Length: 276
Image 1 (tube, rainbow, N blue to C red):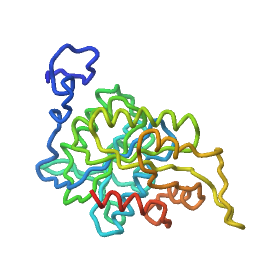
Image 2: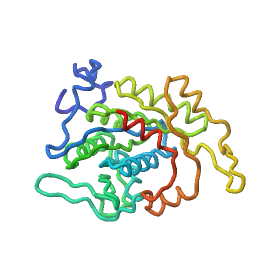
Image 3: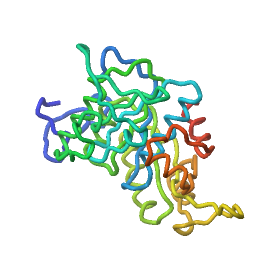
Image 4: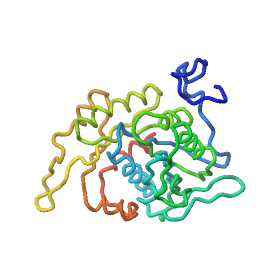
């Protein structure tokens, strides 16, 4: 790989592991003082489907089961993880490297918003620069004794997902979708990208699946009939969870109290991750 590589094979004539179908050749070691046992990517074909929510809930759930969990927020231009955990302090550093911020229940988190002076400051960077920052979250941050690291990906199949899949040894990914037809179609792009990169797909999680009537308990499909079963059949994937629209979950996310969530929607997904 050239020192000036932009990871855009369409403009390059070099022979390298990526072009030769061996993205593992790009894998980079984490910080020398890091210990990370399993890495789980959380991806989606488009934005607004609840990918960050699923990332947060899974990290909290595995943390409750006694594992040390961490979140690498790779959504550099739309970081929402710190707000969901109510984090206000900034990431620190010592002579060895960067230090993640620890949540109230002990989850280590690194996000671009933990490095900016103001959390509302926009990140106006081009793709290769954003991808480089994500790579540094892996190589320059000291992740101590982590059992499960969750990577919250930006939507789509661009520079950052490509960088993560090529640079970080991802053990499996969770694909997040919602019931709409458009989202179901776009899910296929994310699934196909993961397969092209030889990344194991653990299954599908459908967010905003339904709303439950508080009086009679009836489940109402806000977006019409779900397509997740059809998508799972088309791609041979398991539907791991269906998360409802619930005001308590939305309020917990907005108020930085996601660690207090109650619900069993993702228990099966956590079981799948534990079985790796």
